[in-house]
Image: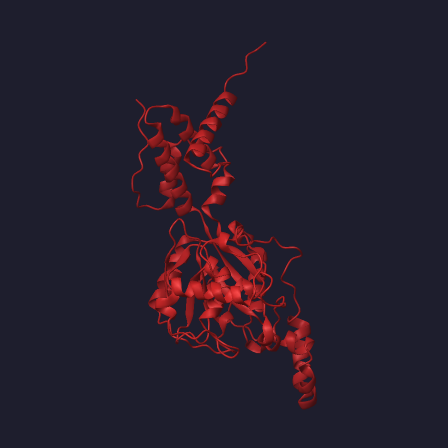
Length: 398
């Protein structure tokens, strides 16, 4: 009698778990798609007694295996400057999105649950002395929990209402005494709804589970006290430290360009250069558009020397000290000119973030399953199995 499918706790990690599932579901070394083959094997058993329970347990086991053993992903978020401050300081902002790391609170991290899509971590100034804050991805971009609630166009009243509502619903215990923010100082309002202010480019790369776990343990153990400094301990410096967790020995501070100041654009450039030598990290550039209506279109990120030269700030420097101006020009010409954004990068919006988040629905669609309900999934599995079985029957000779 055929032994039933048993799912036992396995403590030896993903390789052993994979081997166990491979043997029980008929895996062979010539197959190229574990998920689709495993689901077809479960579907063939759906016509036998008690098939419904076996099928449900099997699908859960397969998807759990995929969620636990598949690689995760992260992204450096290059956020464009906007408004008057963005004109004076066109370096923009940078943050890091982690698909497998979620926020237990804005200042405490944990591994994500299966239904969660990760959080954005960044350094800010003016947040009650905290050095970094973590916000779930969808609220960080749009100030709502449900992507279907994101408006196609906004005005100032709508943006304020969405931000205030999210603060009261999700941040009130933590952010009750935080200022909203103004031209000179940041506040809680810069933590949510960034897509209403500016366009963002996500430099997505692969990560490993053990790297995410190590980062969570490190950040939860260290004191979260602000040491913000616009020149040498800014948001890009914080993101540089996160990248060093995933790429040890890389992303150290450099003198040129920008006189040792870490900028979001320079950090993204370093990631792109590293990816050219390490294609296995699967670097992808995605565009998250600015939601129109609230602000003027945001502007491209620039480096320090680039903005000094191209915006005319170099003119008074030439008058005061032509040697310094010559050094800045040389710095810009030699190291400060580079283009990061490819032509027409893939665009992701509120309801189509799968390329960035790696959500389970994208995994289900990848093996050809509808997601309209249990009956639809079961029916599709049975039809797939029948088709596969018929294709394996010998063709009668005429």
